[in-house]
Image (cartoon, rainbow, N blue to C red; front, side, top):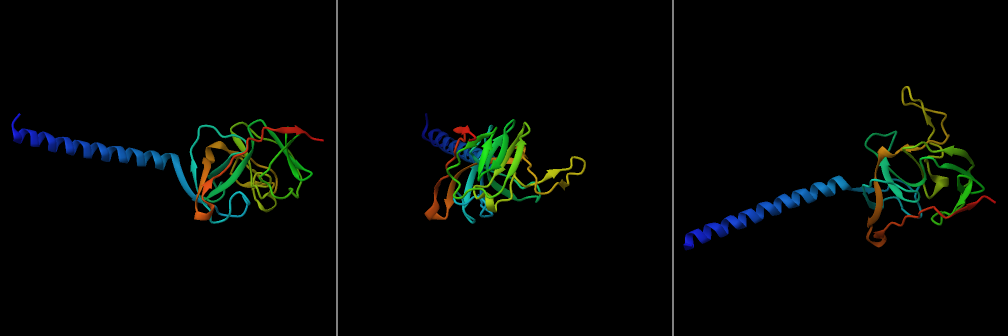
Length: 200
């Protein structure tokens, strides 16, 4: 092969490698944008697990389980997001009494709560395709225990202060990590809430 041809082939390979690198970077960015979201915790409802002004990232998932913390679209304010923990999934009956959460009449151990719950919530059965979401700091959280029922005809809230679960399709991802502030950087733990014992 002649020197000029060798140089042309070498130049072509460099351009091809550069184009492939750019394409791969674009694909990676698109995947990250589609799968990972970055958010700021808006309130104290998840203390002591998450604090206001914590910056977190959430990852999309195909399934969601009890004990996982999720980011989801605020059903009342367009463009806003909320952060809560999954306490019940479709088919579960959730109730609150004696300062604790009960699933299907059985006590659910929740080591992330720093104080007993100071309200009573009658049994609520979560519809299929929905999640019952509560703040870890339940006494200061507006969540599934009191969001109020929605009128199916016009979407208006009726029976304020009553339980309501959220559709899974409103969830954008599981919270995985705090990335700011630096002193709180680290993974965010989930609890399976499977170890439940009879109410007693």
